[in-house]
Image (cartoon, rainbow, N blue to C red; front, side):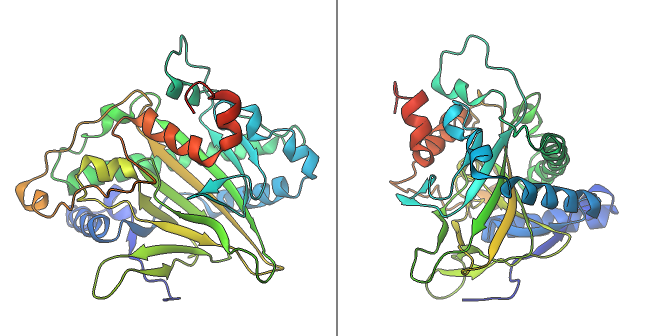
Length: 338
């Protein structure tokens, strides 16, 4: 298993403010990376370091609250899968994840006249009354990364031989935004090391901020030999980008949604991260992208995983993942379909 930073590092400023040659080089490298690995570090975000530090410190303050105060906003109160989850309450591939977390989305009203189960994903967040700053800090971070994600989508469109605005309509107005503020406590010797089990993300793009403790691993499938897990250690000034199932479906597997996991830190240690996910609007069902012939010839097809069937409709694809991961919410608010 590798321990050095082995993923590519891309600089977004090459695309957003670089010369035409720098933009072209960024798009080319993005295409190659998204096709072969599906994971990379991104720098040049244009986010002040002070805002990153404020987010990390506010997250630590939340997890330091007494258990009863965190439980007061437990996810089981929310049909929108928003709120706090204790370590061991989320399930990945049938096993419990040893992490506590706060799930946040865009602050939106309930879906008017909702008739489809996936429309229940839209709604308000839950916030701890003891830490009012968390709402402002977390939503500001979400807004910042939404701007970064929109730039990446423009670059990805070009990388796929499409007009730069190819994804604009699908993400216009009210795209599905989801932020997880995550704390991985240390596990005792001999206990399960599953911080979060092997999985692919069900959305479009994931942007992950890591603090200082390692634990993220990516399944490397390219190259000679059997697939292997490689470490993705934190790098200051970066976020880690990975592609979700939506992009794998749309490109018939030319772009790769890569399996990844998190290993729990050792006893006495802890790990903090903030994961941001963006998907098209809930009602959007996207058609496959007509790739240029040279790219289409390299499309691998969509991975068939009986434990994780993928569908092109945004709301249905996201809901099936939430129901599987959060059985308590499923029982309480989705008994009609679960």
